[in-house]
Length: 164
Length: 271
Image 1: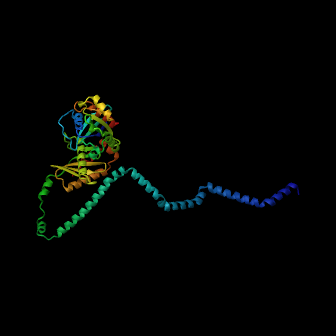
Image 2: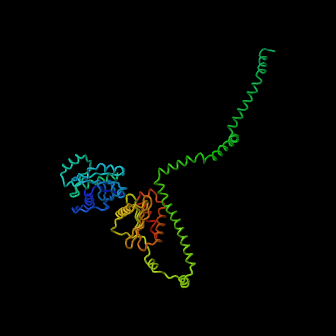
Image 3: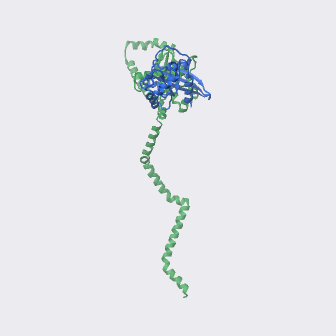
């Protein structure tokens, strides 16, 4: 069996649910008790893929920043994938999204980038899609860390992309 | 005289000079043909010329080839900077270390000389009764340092490349430790903005994490017991030797291969 390790960093504004997505994926848990992440927290999840690869996904849950360039760049360096998380219910977390994604693409041209709108449980999916369309926001997944909707799918997709 | 004979005689008289020239040319061509077809004869003629050319080439070579070779080397080094730095890192480290050690030894010798020459009561007593071990010496002997774990970690990603823990501690996930150490290291190095300076040790209670930085990776040696300057020095030498003994690109990408190498190198190492 081939064993691989890949670094995946979660980035985005404060309170968008990065840590909640992280905990949902790692421990399948959710808490409404909000504690802002200081610095970074790191966890690992081992995924056995259909193609026989055993992937150790090392997740770096970074502290929230409206502007990625304001964060500690050393936490992001070497990432094989980024999950850019925004809050569907808060326009301020995605109105500048194109600039943020451009920053990631310019500084980490080889990394996989997934754009994720979180808190799907707080708004109807139809309404969320309409609003995002209105603001011309491109995204890969709409998730809910609270219910677990599309969280597994998101990380499974990342696993495939980083091992290809 | 008959008509044809007279014509022949006339030809001989008129063409005598041309006939000599023709014969001379034939002789020369035959001689040239012989020279060209006989290696020894050809060598006699050509060798001096070739020797002259070679001598001229050897004399002119530095001037003519130097710019080309220099440019080619410059381009090659520029194109593979990572590989060059990776190869030079342990060597330069050793050189600097050797130089600093040498200078410290000289300083130490000077201090010792001065102390020897000091005619103090304490010195006389020491000479008479010998030096008794101090408390720190006794403690150092009792709590000798031992190598608990060695981890090789990729600098940028914080991913664990290789790990060797003779007395494996169940419950510790080395991947997470590698990630967190990299995060702590990055934080300290960023926060204090020390230029190219890097974190070298972390201490907690009875353990010290000795960090040896290389270009693409760093090695963490977890030491229990007293971590003195001597311990640090020995560890540095050991880790530089390990890196110098061929940490290749292939090994950096093959965790299993690297881990085996790490295990075999540190299996009987003591500090």
